[in-house]
Image 1 (cartoon, rainbow, N blue to C red):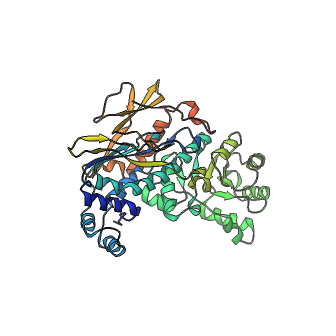
Image 2: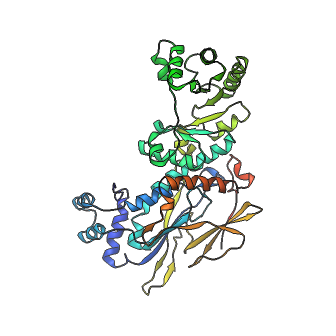
Image 3: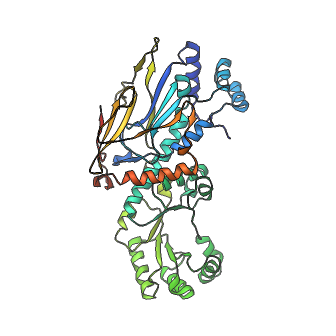
Length: 431
C-alpha cells in the first residue's frame, strides 16, 4: 500500500505541530466539507471520489521514508514526528453517498475525531473530491444532454495519467457507458472500449487496406473511423467491404450536424440502415445538445470532460465547524470573513420530496440526527471509530455509486436539466 501521507500541504503539519505544543491537538473536533456555490451557475452537483477518499485515508501512514524526509526538511518537531509515526485515523466519517447530488452548503462529508486527526486530512480529501466531483458533474450534464444515447469517456490523453483513471471512474458513476482507459477497467471495473485512430489508417497504403485489416481483426461489427481523408468515399469503401452488416462509423471532425446527416443519408442509400454513427471531436454538453436532432447513435467525450467542461474544481472547502472547549463541552465555530462566512455546528442533511420530485435541501444543525418527515436522509456512516465500511470502496462501491446516482438524478425537477447558468434546481434551507 503506497502511503498518501505527503499528498498534503505543509501547513497541515505545522498546525498539528503547534497544536501539539499548546495542548489543543487532542480536542474533539468536527470538520465539514461543503461548497458555498455551484460552479458556473450549474443547477446541481454530483458527488464523486468518496470511495477513493476512504482508500486514501486508509493509506495515510507515515513510514520511515516519509518521516526521514520531514526530519531532513525540518518541517515539524521531533515530538510531532513521533506522533505521526503512530498515526492511524481512529475517528468517524459520515457523508453523502457517492453519486449523490449536492447543492450549496450541502455537508457532503463530515470528519469527527481529534483536531490533530482531522486537520491533516484536509488537503487529501479536498484534492480528491474537488477533482472527481467536477468530472462527475460535467459528465452528468453530458448524459442529460445525450438523452438515451450512450457516451464513452476517452480523455486519457488530455490529462495526468492518474487523473485519467479517476476521471473515467467519475464519468461512469455519472452515467457514461464505457471508457477507453484500460487501468480504469482493471482497477474500478469500468467497461472498456476502443478500435482505431487515424494513425492506423495512415499506416496503410490505402484507406481500404486499413479498413480491411481492422475488419479482419475485429469483425464486421467494428467501428470504422471515416474522416481521415474523404468521409463519403470512406463510407462507400466501408459498406463495399462489409455490406449491410457494418457495425458503426465514427466521425471526429467537421461541422457535425451537417456531416452526420450526410453520412446517415448515404448509409441508408447504400442499404446500411442499421449501421450506427458515433461522433467525438471535443464534445461538451452544449455540443451534444446541439446534436439532439441529428441521427447520432452514440458519443465519445474526452478533452472537455476531463477538464470539468470549463470548471475543473467543484469548489469544496474543508472547515472546522465544532470543537471542544476546555471543559469538554462542544462549541459550534465558524469564520465570519466577507463572502466566506461559514455555518457553525454539526449538520445533518435531508432531501425533501413531493410526489417523488426533489423540492428542497434541508440542513439541520444538531448534536444528534433528527427526524424530518417526508424527507430522504442524505448522511450515511462511512467510517466508524476508524473502521471503513467496505460497501463504499472498490469495484462494488463504484457500482453502488453508479446505481445510486441513476436513482437520485431521476428525482430532479425538470429545471435541473437546463444547461444555461442559473439558480440551483432546489433551494437549500438551513434549519
